[in-house]
Structures are given as C-alpha cells and as structure tokens.
Image (tube, rainbow, N blue to C red; front, side, top):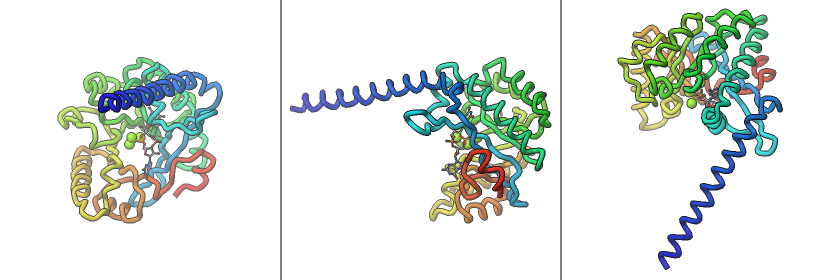
Length: 275
Ligand code: C2E
Ligand code: MG
Ligand code: MG
Ligand code: MG
C-alpha cells in the first residue's frame, strides 16, 4: 500500500515537473517574438531623495504582457532570457527605450535613470559599446544614467565584473550594487569596485517598524555607515509605509523607493504624477 502511495507521489511530482518545464520551454519560445510583437514594455518607479522628498530618478523595470498568460514577472522571464541568449536582445530594448524616454523627460525636469543589468550582460563584449551608443544617440549626460548589478551577479566573477565596471565608469555613468545584503559580498572585493551607490535589499526594509525586528534597523544603520564612509549614496528598496520612511531618514539613508512613493507604472502614468 505504501509502495503504491509512494509511486503515486512520484507520478505527481513528474507531472508537476513536466508541466513546469513545458511552460518554460513555451515561454522561452514566445519570448523570442515578444520584442517584434511589442509585448515588452518598461515600467518606471520613482526614487525619492529623503531630505528634499523629491523624485531624483526613476528605475526602469521590464514588463512582459504575454498574449495568453498576461503579465509575466521579470523574476521568471529574465532567467529564461539569460539561459537562452535572449538577454542581449532584451537588454538592448531596455537600454534604448529607457534612455529615449529619459531624454524626453529631461526637457521638462532634471531627473536621473537607473536600470538593471544581469550577470550575463557583464560577460558580453557588446555591453560597453551599447551603453556608449545609447548615450550618444540620446545626448544624455552620462551622470544621469546609473547601471545596477546585483550583489550576487558581481560576486560570481568579481575580477571580470571589476574590469567591465571600470570600463563603464570610464564612460562617466554611475554604478550601483542592487539587492545589497543578500549576496555574501566579500567587503575586500567590494571595496575595490568603482561604485557610486548601494541599494539596500527590500527584505531589510520590510522588517523595519515591525515589533521585535530591531536587527533590521541595526543592519541598515551598519550599511549606511559603511556606504557613507566609502563615499557612496545609500538607497532603500521596497519602502511601503510612512513609518519606514521616518526610520530610514533617522538612520541617515539618502534615498528610497517603494510602493509608499509609487509603484512601477507606464511612463505616461508615472511621469505626470511624480512625488
Ligand atoms: P530589483 O531591481 O531589485 O527591483 C525591485 C523589485 O521590487 C521590482 O520587482 C519592483 O517592482 C519591486 N518593488 C518596488 N517597490 C516595492 C515595494 O514597495 N514592495 C515590494 N514588495 N516590492 C517592490 P520587479 O519589477 O518584479 O523586478 C524584479 C527583478 O527583476 C528586479 O529586481 C531586477 O533584478 C529584475 N529586472 C527587472 N527589470 C529588469 C531589466 O530590465 N533587466 C534585467 N537584467 N533585470 C531586470
Ligand atoms: Mg534594481
Ligand atoms: Mg533590488
Ligand atoms: Mg531584486
């Protein structure tokens, strides 16, 4: 009896696994056509200075509206794109779309742009020329553009990543480390990288203001102190409440983004209603 039940369980896992693999294969195929079909678009989320409480930049976040499955999270399709060599195409789309949009917006106000790079893009020799070309075509001042790399992506190949970061820095763009606190950085390695900004992972911010979560506050205080002593701007991600904003200001955090200030939205909706 136990044997039958055991087998039933394996079959159940088999079916689940097969369905998951099939969905991924289908999505990977559909992703190839997503750019020509115009299913990809960029959402923008405000980044707010905690002293002036004004929007100083927007983060561009990629969105995929699939014809059958609706909105698919970048958490799902970015890894697919990385596995299937589509990340270059998506990265080009992202960079072109966001820099053009920002150049348009900067005719009205002084505002910066920050975008995400994946680990695979750092290995791609065409990245640096693509960034250079985007700046040239749009006429954006390089300091208006910030490129984010997650801490874990940087730590995969710290030496190689360091070389690419120095080349990018040579173009005059800013560099940020994303999801800081989750990637087991060696501080000795981090110290050598040409960084401008630390983005504190939202898991620490989410715990702020929760009863019995004084650790999160201590960790953020530590990151802010370390970041400032390295001359870096410190940004908190995932800020959802007024209380969190208050604590972050008290801790000396420079900037914040999150649902409290605004969700990532289409350009038309976000740029006319900036905090
Ligand atoms: P990330 O760069 O760390 O972006 C922050 C994520 O937190 C975004 O998820 C954003 O929508 C979400 N978020 C913002 N404010 C809040 C908040 O107050 N509460 C909560 N719970 N979440 C908040 P999203 O858009 O699903 O993106 C997930 C990740 O996918 C990004 O993390 C980034 O690593 C990656 N990604 C997004 N767009 C791109 C892209 O164009 N290229 C690459 N390579 N990766 C991208
Ligand atoms: Mg980011
Ligand atoms: Mg992040
Ligand atoms: Mg993230």
